Length: 355
View 1 (cartoon, rainbow, N blue to C red):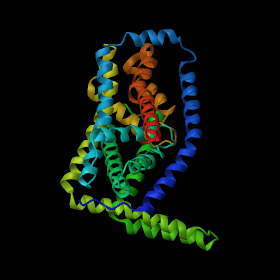
View 2 (view 1 turned 90 degrees about the vertical axis):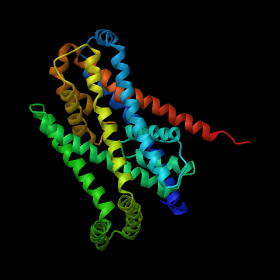
View 3 (view 1 turned 90 degrees about the horizontal axis):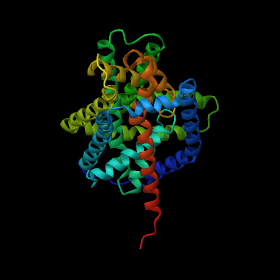
View 4 (view 1 turned 60 degrees about the vertical axis):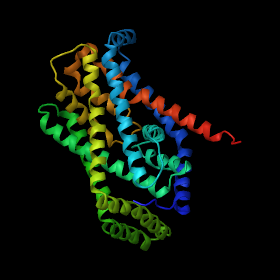
């Protein structure tokens, strides 16, 4: 695909959206910290923290390292995918630079409700480093569609395979998560392949409010047209580069498989046996679907609670809280910290005066 020329209007819109998101970041970060503290207080308030940390120290470092490698692989697969997509659009992007963007996106996804801030700010930082706005947007759209599709397919397969795993509140959370992710995937699909259907629906929706006094309806229509035009580029790319799109989709499946393998690494770190890799993989897949659609930064509180509910029989009462802490540390908290450091270093480097 030929390199798409950078549109000043689109870049300025992305910049405005990013600045607005950055203004909310302080509030979101505060909410994130409050939720994290409240979650861990609720989980560990009746437990001896010394025993929890002593149990964590007994974990086999080899399997802990393997879990960390899986999580690093998760980031590297996304970076590889995004860099390959951008190169196919004519952009010169190294793997390391794409990895930096991936960490930036992960951080802002983690600290904003429903991961709403990740993609706009990742696109913003891409454009700040010379990547054309339309190309950055298209790469993130394809990556997002792939993740959404992989999560849905793996979640449904695991729900059918995992007899007896789903039940009670977890079942309802899974159904809600499946509906939310399913609706999101359907809307993404229509936006990419049938933009006119979405456009007509939006026009009718806004037309109703326009007739009832909404003065900004035309402004919202223009914004919808511009957004749908971006998704339509995705349709053109998929139709003209099907082998590349299939490869991109396979990378996102591999990315999610690596993520879902982490609980098994934690399980083996405690030298436990009796449950196989497929069972723990299934549980993590179900957990992810059940919590990913909730409007919470990083699904804090929900992920920890569902883990305790799903993995109770796997780790037993004595190790359950420690296993949750280790698992969540590997697949979330440590990498939120690492990605935050990446964001701050990137900001500091960009602020240095050029000679």
